[in-house]
Amino acid sequence: MKYLLKIKYIGTAYCGFQCQKNGTAIQNVLTAAAEKVFGCPTMITGCSRTDSGVHALGFCATAEPEEQATIPAEKLHRAFAAYLPDDIAVVAAAEVADDFHPRYNAKGKRYVYRIYDALCEDPFEKQRSMRSTPINEESLAKMQEAAEHFVGSHDFSSFMAKGSKIVDTVRCVTEATVCRDESGCIVFSVAADGFLYNMVRIMVGTLLDVAKGRLEPSDIPSVISSLDRGRAGTTAPPYGLYLKEVFYEEKIDWKCS
Amino acid sequence: MKYLLKIKYIGTAYCGFQCQKNGTAIQNVLTAAAEKVFGCPTMITGCSRTDSGVHALGFCATAEPEEQATIPAEKLHRAFAAYLPDDIAVVAAAEVADDFHPRYNAKGKRYVYRIYDALCEDPFEKQRSMRSTPINEESLAKMQEAAEHFVGSHDFSSFMAKGSKIVDTVRCVTEATVCRDESGCIVFSVAADGFLYNMVRIMVGTLLDVAKGRLEPSDIPSVISSLDRGRAGTTAPPYGLYLKEVFYEEKIDWKCS
Image 1 (tube, rainbow over the protein chains, first blue to last red):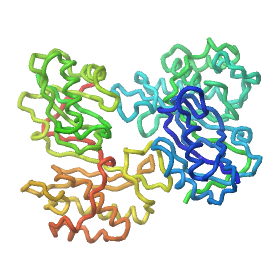
Image 2 (image 1 turned 30 degrees about the vertical axis):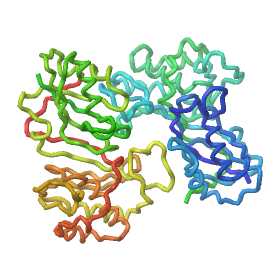
Image 3 (image 1 turned 90 degrees about the vertical axis):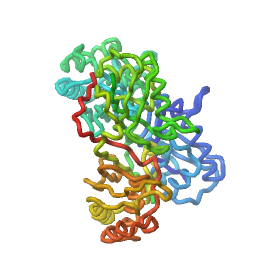
Image 4 (image 1 turned 120 degrees about the horizontal axis):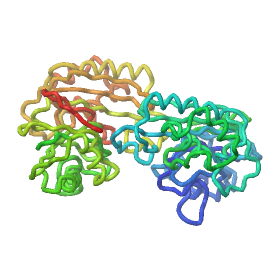
């Protein structure tokens, strides 16, 4: 039996999803919990790495217990709740085919990035959003206009961390919006068939350059076409970033009861 | 100079606002920060105690430095930010008259209580809302109907923790609503000229009895008039409770820049 797990986590205390030499990864904690849930060695495979401090609202990972598992998918969220710490939760689960791979079968993902720009600090936003000086409505509209230029198939080399070894740097962005949400934060939402290393965080740094007037929305196409990392903005901090959703070709029969 | 400070805090790590023999209180931390901000002994007086684990979105406290202070109110939020931990923030400040008392001058307060009732756990809600089994729309409507019976001047003895020494137990509730907010939580919002010890948390326990069918909305008037703590529900946990707003007779000239 192979299960796909949908996971929410607060990334603050972890060095990312994937096991690292230094620090505790979400994968370590999830593996330990899975072995208690299934009572046998269990392989956990994630849909992506996430950086240290990055959060997830809908991370996907497969769990493959070595022995035959009998626990139904709809009960897994409860079983895991008994063994996971407060900052990680399985929110739904599905049975998937043996050859299903959470990363290679993904046809896209959506990330959101939260920017808190009020004058005063908010303890409830600490480590859950990026801090910015106030952004007025006019600047917000410019960020939205700039974000629209990300949509489409482009070589996003300008938006990839230097040193990344990826060869194919073309990605198709299917959605990119900026708005202010109910909590008062500015939220950048972006969906694509895949993301280069630090791509969302560099997009955010670039949108903040637009908010500050260092770039115009109409400059974005040339920042993209330059293929020059130096033309885009700085890399925004990890703690504003949330992996929101993973899209799969096959219909996933999510269960939670 | 006497300042009124508006404060947000995550109450999880503290034993409440007021200094206690055991544990660190918000007041301890705020006093230490104020003495650094003003460079002299400073008396901090709060608008109320709050229980251990209770949060605040708009707690009010006065700060009275022993020596003449020259720092303008609008700069205080920044000055405090340098000395306060991540879970406490001054969000605005005002100059007030020497005889202003943050508790006795208050003519009312508003609290909100958050209930998280999804099937699965949410790490982002841990310690920030009460956990409940799912509440459907019909039950939510009953909770709203029940809450309306709280409005008015009543002897709220049934909604006061046993052992409380308060003699005058009549309070005037000016607003009591139940709705589901954008985050998916059920939010009970209640404003009154004052609150008895644990009053909001017992109201929530009672509303949950209504949701579960153990009480009908129309039972609330008789629960109130019985003056019997045993007729009301259990005391809901502290971590769902937020002191949202304090109302003063005088217009407070809040500043933050």
